[in-house]
Length: 451
Length: 168
Ligand SMILES: Cc1cc2nc3c(=O)[nH]c(=O)nc-3n(C[C@H](O)[C@H](O)[C@H](O)COP(=O)(O)O)c2cc1C
Ligand code: SF4
Image (cartoon, rainbow over all chains, first blue to last red; front, side):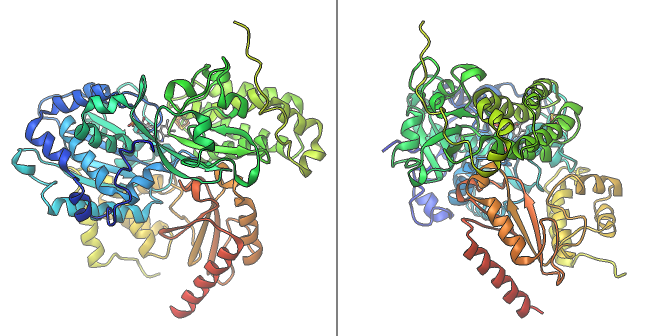
C-alpha cells in the first residue's frame, strides 16, 4: 500500500468532527509551529519539502509565500481556493467533505506563516452542503481555542471565513477569485501587479489550493525531509488524483508520485482498469484544460520510456507528445468514446465560462464550439479542421488570463493526435452519425524514433 | 405588488456576513446576500429584489445587476419549485448524461431551460459541478443527486411530487 498523508486518517469513525480528529493527533502541527517555530521557519520548511501548488500550475508553494510583500501596517491575506471547477476535478471536495479539520489545521499553520489574521475559503457556490460542514468545523476549532485572538498564548490572531461563489469557472483563476470576493463580476485582473503585492483590497495576498494547504500539515508533522523523500525529483510528496470516465472504480486516490500511469489505470488499488472489458483509447490526465493523449502516448513517452504520474513525466515531450499533471483531474476514455464529441463538449464549456473581457477568448471560444458542432453533426468540411487549429493558435497567449490557453489546448491536442477521427467525421458524415470511430490505431505501439 | 423584505433573523445573518470584511468593504457580502435573497424570495432575483439588496449593502443597483447577470447560479426569471440542474460536461457525457437529460425532457414534457406548466419543475443543463466520478449527476437545491439512472430519476420526481402535495 502506498503511503497516505492526506487521507491517512480518512477511515477513522467520526473523523469529520473535532473530537475524533483531535484524538487522532489533529492540530499537533498548530501547536508545533506556534510554540517552536517562527513564521519564516514554517515558510522554509515548506520550501524544503518541495511542495508544489496542487491547483493546477504546480508553482512551488514555499517560494510563493516568500514573494509576499510585507509593508508595515498593511494587512496580508491568505485565500484558500476551493472553487474546484476544472472539469474532471473533484478532489478538494473529497477532503473538505470527509476531513474538513485537516484543511482548517493547514489554514491556521499557513496563515501564521504568511501573517494572515483573516483568511477566507472561497468555495464554489454549488457546494452548499460543504459550506455547512466547513462552518461547523471552524466553529469547533474556535470553541477549542485554535482560532480567535492570541491562539495558544502565542500572540497570533486568526479568523477563518467561508465564502461561497455563485457558479463561474473563471473564479478559480486567482485574480478573478479576488474580484469575486470583493463582490464583483469574476473578471480576471491584468497582471502585474501580482496578488503577492496587490491582491484582496489591494493588500498583499497569497492564494493557494485546498490540497496544497492541507499538505502543509503532514509537512510540519513529519518534517520536510520525510515529505521530500516521497515521489521522484521535483514531484515531491503525495498527490490526490480524481479519476473518472470509463474506468471500473472512479473516485479520489492519493498516490505517491512514483507510480506509472499504467499502474494507476490498471491496478486494483486505483482505477481497476477500463470498465466493462473495453479498451483504453485516450486520457486527459490533469483536468479538461490539459492536452488529451491517445493510449499509446499516455502509457509511454515518445522516447519509449514508461510514463509516470509526475509533473515531469506527464509533460515529457511538451505539447507535441506530452500533457500535464495539472489539477489531477484524470479523465479516461474507452474505445466507444468519440473524440470529436468530447472536444465539442469541452468547447461548449469554455464558451459558457469565458468572462468575455478579451475578444480572442470571447469570440474564439464561440467560433470553435460552432465549428466543432458542425463537424460532429456531419456538416463539417476538411478546411474547418485547419480553421479550428488556426483559431485556437490565435487565442493562446493573446489574452488577459490563462483561460484562453486552457480553452485552446484541448482543441489543439485533439486535432494533433486524432486528426484521422476528425477527417472521418467529414468524409464519412453519414456513417459518423450512426457509429463511433472506435479505437482505430490509437493504442498501437509507437515507433520509437532512432536516436 | 408586495415588497419583499428579509426577516429579522436574516438581517442578523447578513450583518454577520458583513462583519467578516473590513470597514467599508461591505460589498464583499454581495454574493452570499444574493444567495439568501434568491432562497427567501421565490427562487429568483427580480429587479425589486436586486434594488433592495443594493440598498441593504449601500451600493448602487447597477453593482448588483452586474453581478447577478454574471454568475450562473442566480436566476433572473421565475423557476419551478424544484430545479433540476443536470451536468452536461465531458466526464458526465462519457457516463451517459445525454440520455438522462433526454429522459427527463420526455418524462416532464419540457425542454432544457423550460418549466412545467404546473410550475413544479425546471430543467436546466449546466457545466461541470465537480462530481465527475459519480456521473451522471444533477444538482437539486442544496444537494447533489449522483449516479443517476432512469429509475433514480423516476423516484426523485415522485419524491418531489409527494413533497409538493404535502406542502400545499
Ligand atoms: C481558468 C482557471 C481556473 C482555475 N481554477 C482553479 C480552481 O478551481 N482551483 C484552484 O485551486 N486553482 C484554480 N486555478 C489556479 C489558480 O489561479 C491559482 O494558480 C491556484 O489557486 C494557486 O494555488 P496553488 O499554488 O496552491 O495551486 C485556475 C486557474 C485558471 C487560469
Ligand atoms: S482569457 Fe477569457 S476568461 Fe480570461 S480574462 Fe480574457 S476573456 Fe476573460
